[in-house]
Image 1 (tube, rainbow, N blue to C red):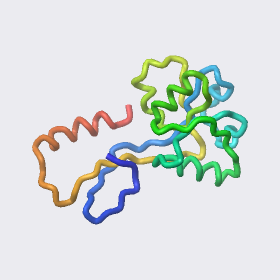
Image 2 (image 1 turned 90 degrees about the horizontal axis):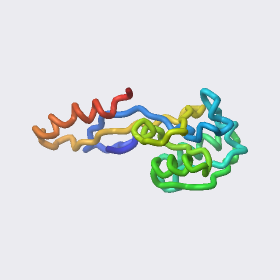
Image 3 (image 1 turned 30 degrees about the horizontal axis):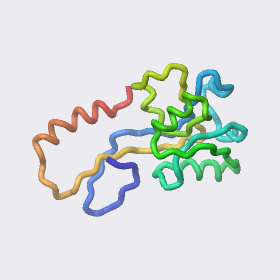
Length: 150
């Protein structure tokens, strides 16, 4: 699996998950009461987001640049789970993929959509001439079901 775009003539792709970067924060944070958060509203708040070399970081940087906002990035992480854990402990608002919240026992955290939306698609990759596999054919329906939004 990989994030889009993947452009190669030898690769066949299938979108598994449509996703977006969101604002993950403690439920007692002043912005937690909002149903969604505009990127401009983040300017005075300490942020946690991806390392510069992470695949999703350019999405975040581009959104701030287009909005003319200088973010106060206090912590940079390689994984969404690290950002979520830091937000749980009050280190700031994490701009990460929030899907792990559904399966983590971290009460007191909320995820709010970020506007503009930073859309991300997770792809299943296969070599276009790879032979079919009985095991893969049996596994893929389970993967698709697990990846589907609830």
